[in-house]
Amino acid sequence: MMKKKHQVYLRLNLMSLFLIAVSFISVTLAWFAYSGLATVSTEVDVKAWFIELEQNDKKVTNEITVNSSDLYPGMKPVTETIVIKNTGDSDAELKYSIVSARILDQANYVVNEQKSTEEIEDILSHEFPFRVNFNLSQKYLLAKDDDDNIDEAVFEISISWPLDSYSENAGEANIIDSEWGNKAYNFQKEELRKYNADEEHYQIQPSIQIALNLTAEQYLESIESSDPNYNLGDSILVDVINNSRCQALLPNQCLKMYVIDVNNTIGDRKVTLLPNPLSEYRASSYDEYEATKNDIVDGWQVFTRGLTVEDLLKIISTDVNKSFVQIDGVSDAIIGNLTYTGRMNRELTRVITSNGRFKFLNSKFPFLVSTECYWTSSVYGYEKAFALQKDDDTTRLFGNYKPNLCKVIPVVEMDEDRLELES
Image (cartoon, rainbow, N blue to C red; front, top):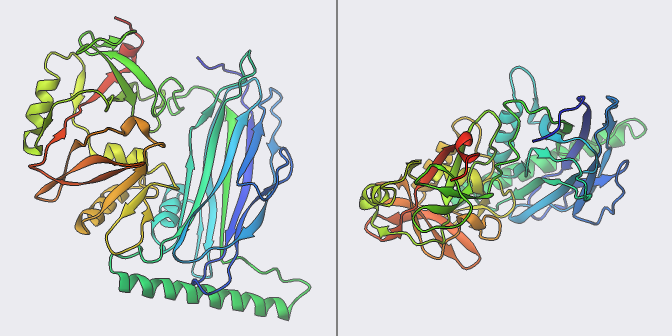
């Protein structure tokens, strides 16, 4: 269990700047260069932030500056990675928040009573032809242990501009790309005019400016705190007959399962688990899904339900670099943040209507990968249902025709109290 000490704060203020333009216009994308606690080369993609929580309530700030590279429609996603390491003796809780975001002279968002961090993040992820996405791999860091092992988390910022994915209609998407490219060009030209008119005082503004706070404070184990005992992808052996934990695999009783909660908290008190997809399961058509699932769990004393497409999208969308929406005839687009109210349903509707699919790297989420297809309980229009199928180094989440045969894998939900017991 984590240690409780005096609460201290460490705040990281960072500014991400980048310019937007059409593919034939020279542009600038501002990335991070460090000064302060960590010294790193601006040419290195992965930066390190070392935090050390003390007991004197001292506030520490890590300054971040920027360097530049190119951004243009049709670019592959570019990701900036910050590795956060806890070298201190106190467990830390991590979080990030958006302070403000300005897009050319078209929109200016500030976190206040009218706009939340979550809403602005959703806008940046989905409401423009370019996409800005953020992800924090875990929301806590354990203190350095007696063997000097250092816990770490990863904060990623992804910038992308799919050439024609803003709309399912490629012609319309090209018009939108050109429109925003022209807006960016005119904004930059106007900034240059202002600078030339007042060279001594005027500072040229970037086309898009985003300010965030990345904060570490002492872990106090509140109901909203992440539970370090149940991380996404952790494996657990579960005795499905005795509704408890177990120590050795046993067919039809002690099964290997994986945590599929993206952020299990202390207050949740339940853990959502997916049995190992590589195990043997019965296959059926989708119309026989429910009956097959019930046969599989007959005699189990744990709560079970069907796997949903929402379960999977919550997981794979956390990869802001290599998890894509694929729609025939347009460029792949990063799935992006789906947590804001209604966004998940809107994206599902868009993909189903366009006969699209989702794709993720097997190496990123190996606990979801099977050598055979397996069903979810979620329908994909009238004739299809969502299923997963491995394709070389990726897996697709797609609409599979209901008469086809795929494995059926139930989801298990267990009380944390039961997982503390052993059979």
